Image (cartoon, rainbow over all chains, first blue to last red; front, side, top):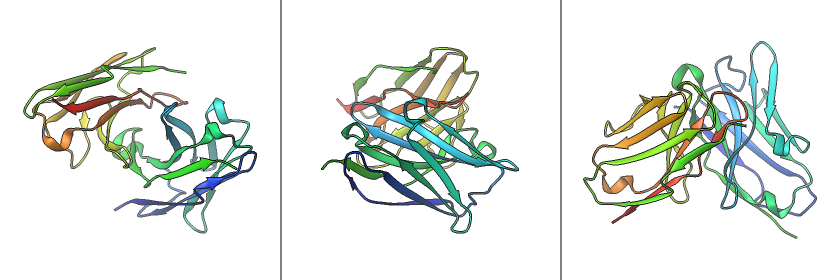
Length: 124
Length: 107
C-alpha cells in the first residue's frame, strides 16, 4: 500500500531554512494521476495547505499566497520523494508539518494518504 | 480564497447518538468537499470524499451529503472510537482550505 515517510529536523533557528523530505513508497512522485502536498497544523492557524508539486507531462507547482515568497517544493525522481523548503522562518512557522497525496483517480481530489507528521519548532 | 466554516466547533454526545456536523463554503464548490477525522497526535484520516463517497475501509455509519455551499457529515450511531476532531476541506481550486474543526467529546 502507499506510504509516506517524513524526515527532517524538529528544531530550526529563526531566519534559517526549514527543510523536510517525504519519501514515497507504493506510488511514484512522477505519477500522472497524483499530486504531492505539504500541509501544516498549528493551534493558531489550524490546518493550512502550503503547496504541492505534480507531473502532467511536465512539472507544476502551486503555493499558498501566505508563504509563496518563501517556499519551494521539489520532486526528486531519483529517490522517489519530494521536499519542502521554507526560508526565513519565524516562530509563527512553528507547527506540525504533514506531507499528503492527492489522487484524483482514487479519491477525488482529497488527501487520501498522509505522512506521520513532523513537529517543527522555530526557536533560538 | 474559499473559506470553510464548520459548526458546531464542539459537541458532546453519547455512544449510540446520531451526530451531524455541517460545513459551509464561502462560494459554490460543487461536490469538491472532503471530510477527515483526526485523533490526538495523529495525521488526519480521510473519511468521505467528493461530498458523499465513503473512503475504502471507513465504517458505513459515516455518511456525507450536500453540494454547492452546504455540506453535512453524519455519524449514524456514535461509537467510542469516533470521539475525535472532524475537519472539512475543499478541493475545488487552489488554495485548498480546511474548516476550523469540530471536536466530538464524550457526554
